[in-house]
Image (cartoon, rainbow, N blue to C red; front, side, top):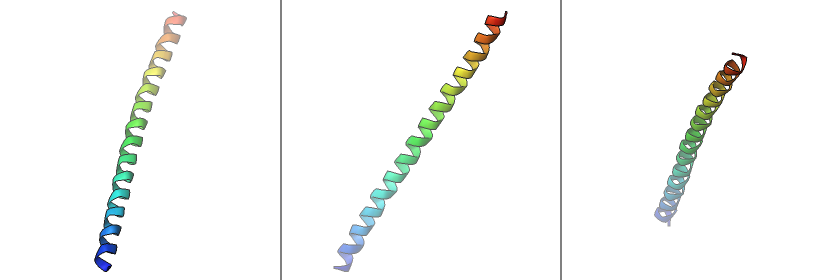
Length: 54
């Protein structure tokens, strides 16, 4: 009984740990992509404004 309970708890914690790590990785990748796109957009905006002024 105790062994089954411990193994079930272990698998649950493993599952939640995998879920947490995958969520952190996905959010980190999404944040990185958003930052990269944001920087590209600002660079395009600045160069566009400079071209427009010239």
